[in-house]
Image (cartoon, rainbow, N blue to C red; front, top):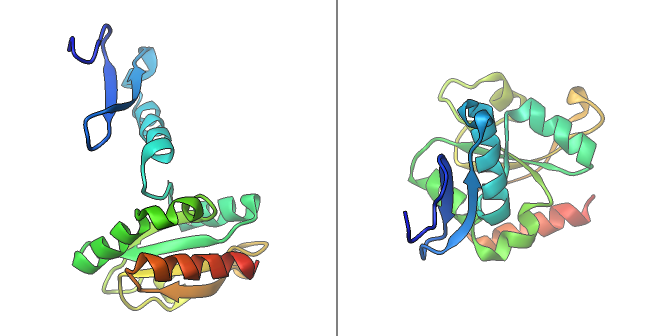
Length: 165
């Protein structure tokens, strides 16, 4: 505790992989609220993490994409090694500048297709699907897809999506 100079409870200290402090949060009465803690973690990840800022579901991502005027990237995952490899590619430093220029959402792919999978013709995971959110849900359409785990190919594909806009 002394090495981190923690003087109040609760205190959350966020460290990088080299154990260097990157941020901290000292709690308050609101500390008992799970949404407060979730917002804190999202803020820290957006500020310091290399993962995309994930939206809470496809509908929320499409709404956000319309408001921000940007495309939505849907990562369909099945939790297997291929999905882990594709997600690791998102964290590559080559993609740092591009990650924030899209709205991201992660969806679990099921063997029995759900409505979202059927709507966009998704039959397997892992898959990264680019969607133009359009003016409303009926207007949303696919503009690209990729299964590549190569950061350079992903970067080129993402840059091409931005040029097409």
